[in-house]
Image 1: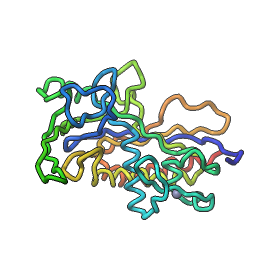
Image 2: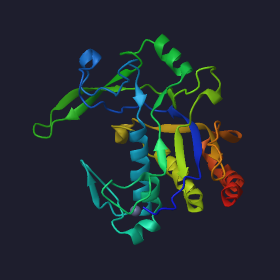
Image 3: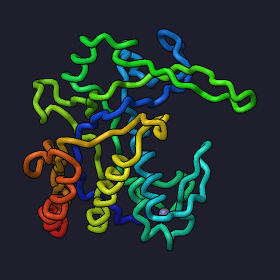
Length: 279
Ligand SMILES: [Zn+2]
């Protein structure tokens, strides 16, 4: 890693994630689910509410961006294969490896630029789901006919899903109030070089790819369609050897949806660019 590496600041992208069709992000076994469904969703062990793990969203964004860009999936991570630049020369110009990261054993890499937070039910969504008579706490159970490949018999299977209409958001970080400012941002993007700012639109592009695809399981059968709403961009950028800013500087009002946000993005990045050239 080069010695002149300096964190110049961070971008903050906040958004609500609206569940448009029932969302199934599976839990990894462990505690037997309430009601004993075949395929339970992942829940917060303390509150028992379903959560949307940042790793699920980030992984989907990466794989769709890799596919769209035609990046070679040349590296095995568990069952999945991802693209990883194995030479410094290739890595230097690769937005995917910079934004989403490379395995720790690759010595020439800079720190991963993008952090995606876990998202939780909004207060409003929690209330709606609590009052609704859902099959399980906060969730619905969908019966699916799985076809036994040997006997061709239809085997009924219970899939647990977060119902359409649920809204997820990054956790609240300020204790004092319930305003937007009390929330952190869904995504945090680190800026080490001016080039990083120019690569940020790949993050937003990947979110667009996710909207046209799905999150979690059973997507080809209709589950997991999501939309990003109320998006806004902010930053903490400061000159060298000045204190790290306490508050995020938010730029403008939230955009109602991703299409509108993408339309505004060049202008927003244009406001940030001069801040990076000073110092
Ligand atoms: Zn790469």
